[in-house]
Image 1 (cartoon, helix red, strand yellow):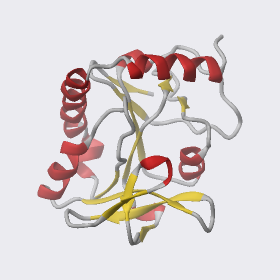
Image 2 (image 1 turned 60 degrees about the vertical axis):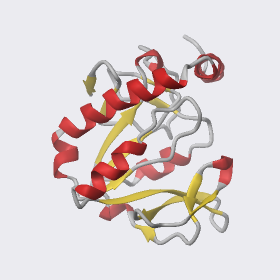
Image 3 (image 1 turned 60 degrees about the horizontal axis):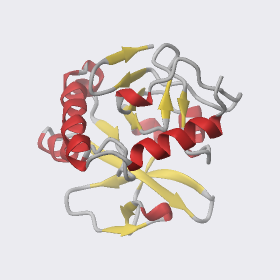
Length: 186
């Protein structure tokens, strides 16, 4: 079995080689699949994310959600707690560059996890059979997922699927994984 470090290195290399047009086209296919999901249709408050290079870009989903009167939140790093929280995001929310150069609300208004129905989660790699997720190594999403009671959907490209991912006791599984080719129920 590959180590977490091996998988992260392989994925970093593959992501650097991605054509932006390919990412856009396949991200759109993933957005279409998310829209068809019953959990998405029912959700009133959704936690999304702003992508890093090579991640699934859900930007178009933000506008779709607002048109459907869904409330949105995105992760914001809290220097005080050294953890991420979710903060409300509206179409006119001013964004600033946060930790890791990820856009986040300049004046974050926290959204408690209990208020969120659906969390769309990025990752480095996913096991489609077990819902296991490999992140970037900080454990930030795992700490959020640990006490989250809503539906969790991992969002990635099909090349990010692995049949075996090393896990630690603190790693949190996802309910579902959506790629450009398939929805994987766990």
